[in-house]
View 1 (cartoon, rainbow, N blue to C red):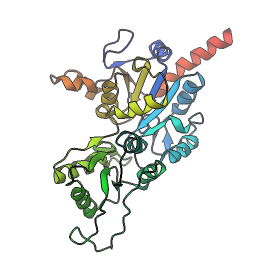
View 2 (view 1 turned 90 degrees about the vertical axis):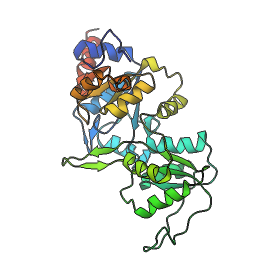
View 3 (view 1 turned 180 degrees about the vertical axis):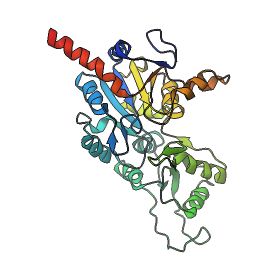
Length: 316
């Protein structure tokens, strides 16, 4: 979508332009990894930006496809890294939204077979959703293992203990057409600090899609459902008053576009401005949804706008 203030898509903005944008928007959605932190280190200035937005009366939420930890663990991380104004209800992870989808939307009646980390299971348990317990013998195979009789959904997230048996079980459960097939997100990979990559939930989901012949319903970005979760918990959310800030064109920018939000790419993560320019010139019209309205080097570029406001308040 076209950004406000007459800017064309993919415009790098700074100074007064950022201040005007911050004044115009009431609701800010931030991705986490690559936007406000890298692993266990906050991006310089990010905590001050987030805390200042909240203190200035702006609504701030965090939308992350990282499904490996429950929201309580995120709270500890926010506090540890200096984001002291953040509250639990501001955190929307793909694991939390998956639990809401199973409980409130499809109202699942039966067990859920989970491929994912303990954090995903904990979010489901917090929502009162029963999960299949893994109790196979070490030498069990798909030929002789037990299959739970009442599995009504298969949910796939990031699983660093993935086994062939888990893939085979999921495929067997999905032979039942009434068994739901869900994925926390479709991220293909995640960057590691060493320059290596970590396969994401999307790569695991793809394997099961091939084996089962079915397509998963994706809960996390770029699906609209995460925004619907936010809208259900915050009254009066107007897409026109929202800004989605992220580092990945194929998830964050597309999510914003799908939800009718203005989008901002920060260059501290996965995607770079050259990729956005390529998408903007693409003859494939759907690629234009991956182009951000605005670009900043880092969200620390917001800081001068707050400093200007503070100076004005002092002079008054």
